[in-house]
Amino acid sequence: VSLIPDNSKAEIDHLVINEVRYDVSTSSGFSEWVEIYNPTENLILIEGYKLTDLENEFIFPANYQIKSKEYLVIAKSLLGFKNEYNREASFEWLMSLADSGDEIILRDKNNQDIDAVVYEGKYYGGINPHPGVTRPNSIERQPKGYDTDDCTKDFVEQLNPSPFLGLPSAISLKLVEI
Image 1 (cartoon, rainbow, N blue to C red):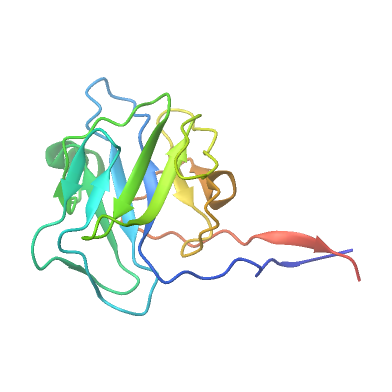
Image 2 (tube, rainbow, N blue to C red):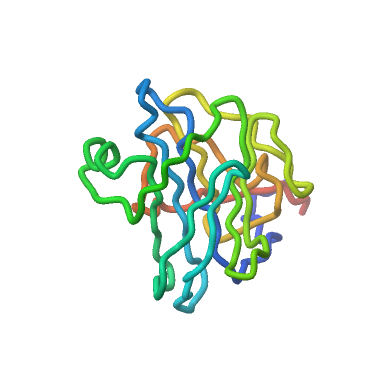
């Protein structure tokens, strides 16, 4: 038996929700945020795209673009995010993600789902939910730029939430008989 990298996941050609911090350590919840990543080789115009938890919605402004291999962060509070990470978030969305489970959906300007993340018992579109994190950790897509529509496989608990940093992806391994 030998360990070799598992390349069975297909690389994707659309934006992904890359990291989510929802179970925060402060009573205000100001540290909640969602990170979006562009794994493609192309600049993507996201004017009119939406981020929703099916209760609240954020609409990206006119002419906004995300470059190839770049990230953007939508935070519950610009000030809270800056105080915690000493960096500006891309946008503010007065959201309140449920600690006990929620869905976060990225939709294009035609209201078509592009990506979704579900956690702690919530279900959406046949996607298996991530089991959840210990406060104040986040869930992060590993490896970045891949998507199986199964949050139990696509996301890991990130002990050091890292908005904008794009930390190296974990190597996914599988056993192969020789």
